[in-house]
Length: 226
View 1: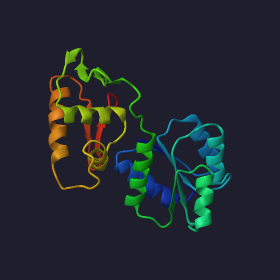
View 2: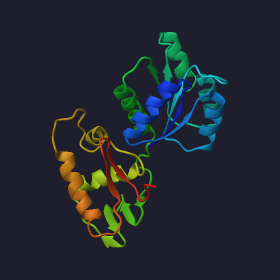
View 3: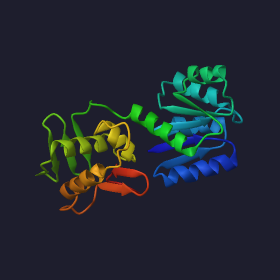
View 4: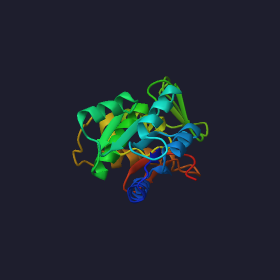
């Protein structure tokens, strides 16, 4: 997914940018509120991660301005201010989640993934497309380059979820929760087996692969990794 980080502490920002990139995400960074607001308004981001106390324009002001303009991009607020009143102010300013410093990166990443799932399109589009791959949700059919590709029900559900998140890294946890309805990792290879079967069906006989493994992070449907 594409994330905008607005954080003025150079050491913290450097660590988060590096760690999020290693998790398979695309990161833009700004060190102050004015520039961060401009970047948020000009770009298309899946999630904003905004430090509350930043120069030129504070984080809550940035969020409030975006919400005033109708921008509903999910926002995770980072702050050393952890009292109840502080968290309430952050959420009322338009933040979707509030994480108090210090925090574990694993928790920050999990919260970002939850916010991205909230934004992901639900059962709206009837036909999903990635390159020459078409999935018709009403007819329950899949075609690539005009060739019909028969899928088992779970394979279809897996591809449907991946294509609704096209261009985003989908983690194993996301797949377990949304395709298998597991809310924990049962230490099974069920995902690996189904991914392998799905890849064989949609990629094996075609020139360009669409289903990609993002090492250490998850999987992605994309026809453009540039």
